[in-house]
Amino acid sequence: MSAADPFGLSGRRVFVSAGASGIGLATAQRFQEVGAEVLVSDSDASALKSAAAAGLRTIKADAASGESIVEVVAAIGKELGGLDVLVNNAGIAGPTAAIEQVELADWQATMRINVDSQFLHIKHLTPLLCASKAPAIVNLSSVAGLRAFRDRSAYSASKWAVVGLTKTAAAELGPAGIRVNAVCPGVIAGPRLDRVIAAKADALGIGIDEARGLFVAQTALGKESTARDVADAIVFLAGDLARTISGQVLSVDGFIEKMA
Image 1 (cartoon, one colour):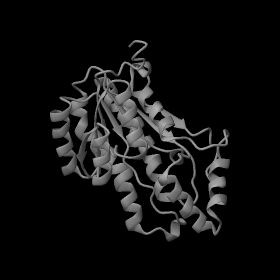
Image 2: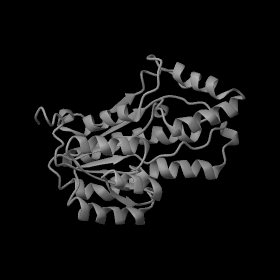
Image 3: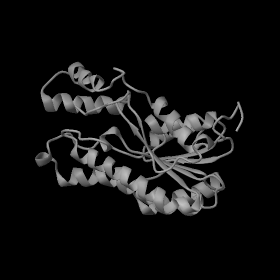
Image 4: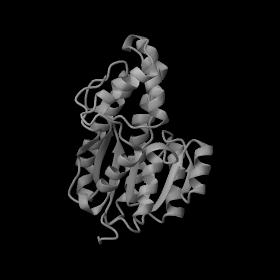
């Protein structure tokens, strides 16, 4: 580490799933800023094109497909020559509805992307991380994975599952020197939050501005966080300043005590 590289991440090889937009893109770019070599995957061809234009290495992949992740493993070897950091970022919002109104197909789709993808990436990329001198995994959970979230049963359950996966992986992989932590974003400004707020407004029969106010009012700081805020936390947990931190869950939420 140095003043120019406070996280000790210069030259580290980083893979970010769903890294072509939102928190994933902000994270990939933040790693680039500190000198890391970065590869991102995404299922959105248009977003990947934009990410590539911004100087990122990219691969089109379905984050919850074992076959697709085998291709990712090959791409990591070709593009990065190994792996030091895995960021499990893929996720979807899932349905906004009372439990009895949630369709099984929507529940399963949410679990597939939010939970299966993280399990599969850890399963297939751990052998690469075992060859690293400073391996780390950062999983994306949510404040919805720490407390109840009305009308968001699938999403909340999936994010609780990520917390359990994180702690179990930290216990299992610790003897190999692999640190595993999770970040829990809260009210993060951007298109995804806009869609969630619109669905909430529709479910409650209120206006968009009123629904947004409900989300922001949950935070002690009284404001939305940004993708960059989350990216900073991920970079910290991946770097040498967090060298003995593992099995932990870090909220980036302005302190939310309960979910609307």
